[in-house]
Amino acid sequence: MSRALEDKRTATRLRVLVEIADRQPAVSQGEIAEAVGVTSQAVSEYIRDLVDDGFVEKEGRSRYRVTKEGVDWLFREVKAIRRFTDHVTEDVLQSVQEDAALATDRIEANETVTLSLREGLLHATPGDAGPATGTATTTAEAGQDVSVTGFEGVIEMSPGSVAVYQVPRARNGGSRAVDVDALSAAVDTAGLVVAAGVEAVAALRRIDAEPTVCAAAGAVAAEAATKGRDVVVVASVDEVGRVTDTLRDGDVTYELRDAVEG
Image 1 (tube, helix red, strand yellow):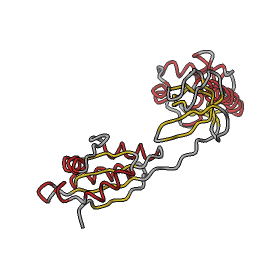
Image 2 (cartoon, rainbow, N blue to C red):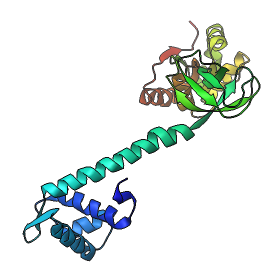
Image 3 (cartoon, one colour):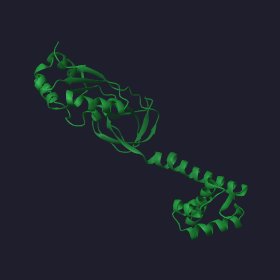
Image 4 (cartoon, rainbow, N blue to C red):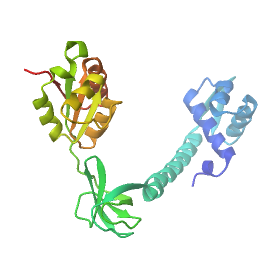
């Protein structure tokens, strides 16, 4: 392991040497002190030690260069730090990372499960038949939530579709001008229905439909679509721009349709 991870002085020494390498040959001890978070006097002492150890050579007043020995030491320490961070990210964090899934059948703790995404939710099925697998850390019955770790593979998922239906302002007919048959057909096949604006909610209620949410419609639709759900957004003229802007910002493809009859 890198000594920079074992004691504070070596860590500061490494940072000072990096700053010198980055700024050489004209080195401002004040700037290094600010970057590292120590006093200028402390930087002066570190530089003097680095010069004594042959890691830095002084070329004149406030002019320093990192020597080959200094570069070699930096490489050794940085490689050791990288090995440690790789161990943490790939071995430690990967092994403790857990997520919740809905069990499709009874699952025992420590059982291998196949992972899939359905209606925007992670599902776990006993066995390793799928391209993405994990290990259950709890026991669950079908329909219950189960904790899963040790993820491997890639969960197959196709993005959902988003259809945005525009409803005119109330003074221009609002919900009364909507093609109820077309809107009903769209809502019936949608996995999620959201609304933006009073006219949009009223239009949905004309067809006896209640939106799942009436706030942050664009953000909800974008999130749901990226998880494979087909979404219908009903939005008033005043709100439709905010919805489509959010969808574009999320790189979500959508169709804009007019909800008005004929």
